Length: 147
Image (tube, rainbow, N blue to C red; front, side):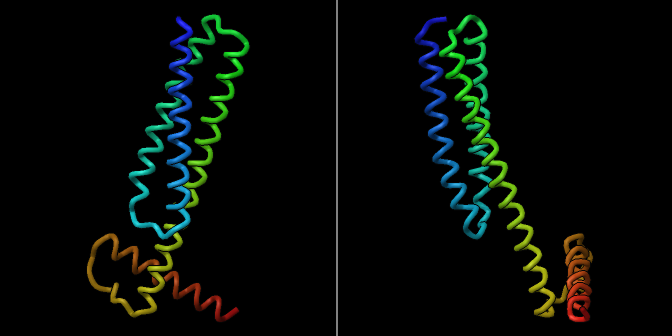
């Protein structure tokens, strides 16, 4: 392989890393705000960019395995560490967002119950879950007030 191929791979890796940094900043802001459903698009974009960076790192690994120098090996290791850090941060943020969404969902259900929202009618699965959640909320409220 030519040196220009390695340089092209490094340039592509750096471009993807910078793109992922920008995406993660936007995602971090989104996670800190109230969810509006737009997180799915950015999550897909981040997952796609992570996969592309993984593919570039794999190509760099092939280059290093076929007789690359120690400097190239060190460079590859650094790019792999960056990928790992970005991936871990993405999973941490996504998990945090899911917890916030579940919490908001539970609060919404409790608000429905408090407002005497009529969930006792109808027979959809969602309404059955709402009835069950309302019953749980009432039970825990009674336990908390009894304690």
